Length: 246
Image (cartoon, rainbow, N blue to C red; front, side, top):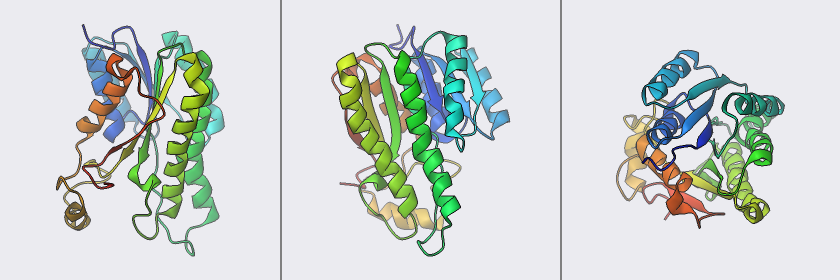
């Protein structure tokens, strides 16, 4: 029997890239899937059909993560449709680039709202209904721990916050039997970050495994953390980066 049968997962950013591969994997493992999407309506509809063909219940929910205060109502809608949430995956985010002298405060605030505030609002609301054994998994970055270069300070700060929240929430929610972890990703081959650019050819020299990750490899680690074999892992920030942060 698939290891997540009878579980319900809520995944932000589930219509594209890494998030879409995560919902595919969790569905193959038997979980019913609620996912949040933004501008990708057609991709969301395709994802729902694909998941339903796997025999699980699936529904996409539009949300503007730039307005994280709207997320409690979204969680209420998911609970109305699915009845419960067992697994929360905070995957959605934006990559904000700009030097300190150039990046506007509005750009800074938007990155904080989408990458960090939405994780706080979503998790704090979902945590109210999680039962013992439930999982919270947030997608962070190796840049939470290292600068990496110029012009990405704001992105780095948001991901440092995501990793720190995961470690701290493990203490908050551990007494209830709820596990909280974060994956700190390196470079992943998606349409937003393809491994075929000139930048890729330079970056790959710094990755011990000599390649970008594929989205399915990230999804596999999420599925492990969501499953029964990870029952004693909480408060961890796990690098999934091909050795980049070693």
